[in-house]
Length: 325
Image 1 (cartoon, rainbow, N blue to C red):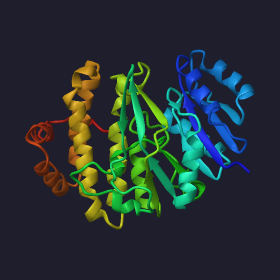
Image 2 (cartoon, one colour; image 1 turned 60 degrees about the vertical axis):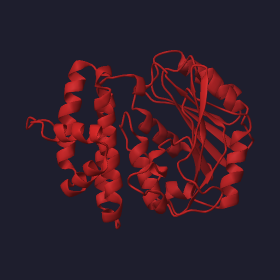
Image 3 (cartoon, one colour; image 1 turned 30 degrees about the horizontal axis):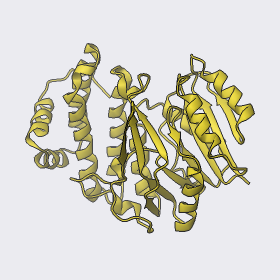
Image 4 (cartoon, one colour; image 1 turned 120 degrees about the horizontal axis):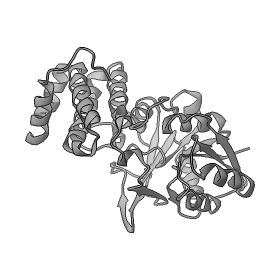
């Protein structure tokens, strides 16, 4: 019986994959499996993973013949997983020794659907601790109640799939899969669905995941058209939240977060290629018009002057009929 399945997508990370695999080796246990999903890498990553399948206890190597993106790679891992519990790791991050044993003990002690954890962010040699934005720890919580308030950072804004552990019953209920094909912001619809549909969760202060920022191949560092998938991701968040039984209560949070993300991208628009920057403005203007307008009005009224002005100006922007997200 497999106790824990660890799903690790890799894409062109030959420089970092050996560190990731060494940290998995320091977390291996007889009843753990490591599902290594290569998303059609073009560097030496497949060779590194093929070797790991032979040398790492519990390793299962799966290779995509076409690149599908992080969401699709994670889904491949979920479909292959046999564990009672599941967790995720990205192919350029790493773990403290023995971390998964502590994480497993935490969810078994609480008996919840999922557990969220803090993490360490690393940028070059600098390290900083990032905590789940929820004050109550080590107790059973209602995930729906952790979505609000709308004007503060909450658990749904801490959208890191690898910062936690999840019971298999979430897979069986169709809650744990990601939206296939999303190239960025894939964690956003996922974590909102998790909080709306799971029945219980907990927060613990374990520090064992080291999240590597500033990787040149990461989509967060690349200003190409794939970054615009955040619009598809947040359209899904708003659409699904509007269908929720507590839509009136939850929609203000979804819309305000969407607005904040649009404003963030507009505020750093110089990092995008010029055609992508133009498309960002047009698609974002259309996205604002798709939102529930009364909820959008309230969201803009609640934001600081700089962001609200930027978004109101964008809202008035003329767009061609053919522009769509």
